[in-house]
Image (cartoon, rainbow, N blue to C red; front, side, top):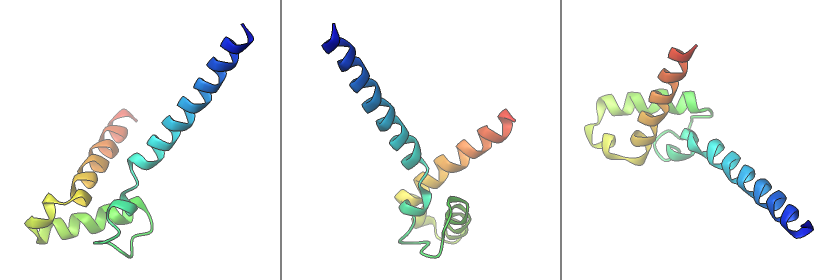
Length: 83
């Protein structure tokens, strides 16, 4: 019984830390866009930078930075609608 309880505890801790890491990295737009937006310090700065580049360069819209920017924007809009 003790092993079973310990196993559940360890699994819960690992699951929670994995989930927390995923949530943290999910919107790390600065990291995804650091090549194109090197001056961006926050996700919002990176978002503005990516939008500016995307308007001027259609080829940029195929990049990982743009893809993550679109996800960030959609999440931001849904969060605003929820409030």
